[in-house]
Image 1 (cartoon, rainbow, N blue to C red):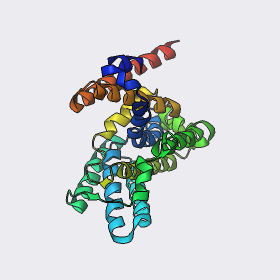
Image 2: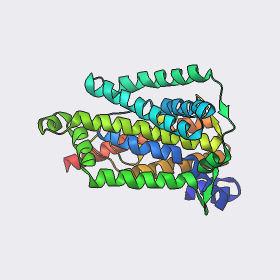
Image 3: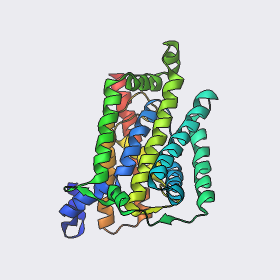
Image 4: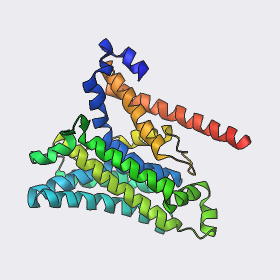
Length: 295
């Protein structure tokens, strides 16, 4: 934050409006990163989350046009959860690699969203719906509060429930977890379904923020979310992770992108920076793990 503050023109990074505004654009990714943290802790990965955002948003938009807003919200949550459930079933029931499954469903879900919408966005949502993506509760953006509540909930799940301990054990040694009679398949299925549900929440907040449901929403988010999770200290090979670390990882990437935007850097260069940060962080984390194991 100090670096970006000094590099930004006229120290514009430190403007109160900018400091309160840029977390608004991080909330959707931060919420989805909570689910991704638990998945990576088990040694898995989910590349379909960005496509699920687009599909859930389109489900919201077209259901709203036909039956109203509340059915639209319910349909979005259902579509996201079912998308995550399909991933979980393919991975657990047929023992397929998570990378292959979610790479395939990434294309599948995006394609379904494009076919349903014919690449046409849905706009003009009711004004009360826009509050969740554009409104404030005092000086705090509304969706930041949703993100904070999600972080608290998943922190308690990881630190205070068997689910967190099971996820750590599965990622550390899945075969040993099976021999210890842990519910490996059930936990994985629950985690992928929960990840899909969080994608729906992200889609709802994003649609509310931009007042448009579109099939290409969430494009490229998977890279940024995985980067943030690893940057926050979750081991890419599984067995170790922290929700608070993920929160800080999302905030760090947000600060970097916000500062680079104020400096006038093009978006494609910002994506390149995210990739560089991911590589450097992965290397540093692995070295730290190796040194800790050696000690």
